[in-house]
Length: 218
Length: 204
Image 1 (cartoon, rainbow over the protein chains, first blue to last red):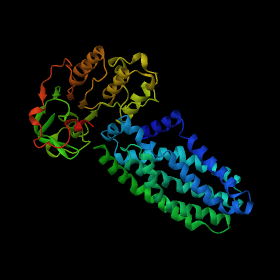
Image 2: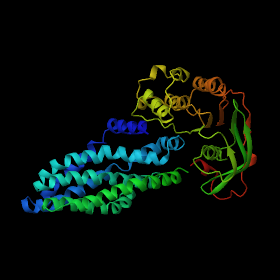
Image 3: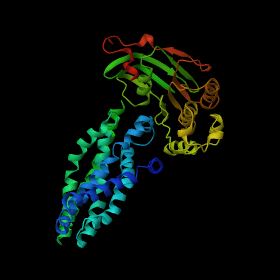
Image 4: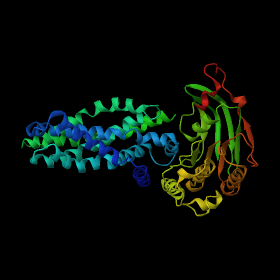
């Protein structure tokens, strides 16, 4: 399993696009918003939590279709399915590799981008915390979606349609935590629920992913 | 070591082969013959566990089977050694140093797999079989895009290393590997009632 994680990370770094693409997309979306809504500080401060979360979510979506598609095309997925690794573990590791190459870097640069949007000073800690807790759920749900669409040509678009509605709870509670932080309120409750969502996906979705992969490999 | 009794397998919901029975004892290979679309790939995938056997049974020691298809599973962004090391680790083994010579990869150890020719890539894909240490191999057209020298190299490895160590191989191929192995024609086991769909469906 560690060998698989190492291989995936190495591939992501070598093939490029792993780290860079999602981050660049995140940056551009966040930079575009003030152009659209105007540079008024009070407006930006108010919408910053939502914008940051939506942008992070879309950036995480970008690289989802590569999670299983590349391995499916070159035959590695069949070979992994017949290897001693449990397919559930393969799904979990793939999602973990996706999180390390997208969710984690997004979390780390989000405070910098928050500065661009005049995020309230009290919200930075909550932005970091909510993204750190919430983005693993995005990767887990996304890898399930990627498994669903793995054999399809042009499955990327369908994948977005399938996955985005499932991202709604994460988005609501993630953005709510940051908003409460920026208003100076206590944000423990939304963060707890966010953690609950993440742990729920971690517990359930590897099995769903493996089941779907087995069907798609037939 | 491998026992198949009255097995049937299906592709896309249509039964393609039925009533198959054969035994392969340790150290023996079995060559599957038959025209395109007869179900060789389907049979091998079913035996390897990628899809269910719809009737009958196939028995071999658990955790000893391995499958190799037309697609190699070679990662182009990794070099030859990294590719082999990955598969060895997945199976909990170390890469034996002899495997590079057995598949004529000695000079290519540090080459990126993306820069290999089709034949070299195929040799790398087959070398995976040498590092995973599995006894029961299901090989689907292992010699595609190999030149005559490489075919002999692979047949030698199969005979002198794998089978000599008590391994078993079921091979679907259209060429003569030069192995002293029984051949089985699948045509008599073609399932009746395959009126729907073209014969090529089994290969898609």
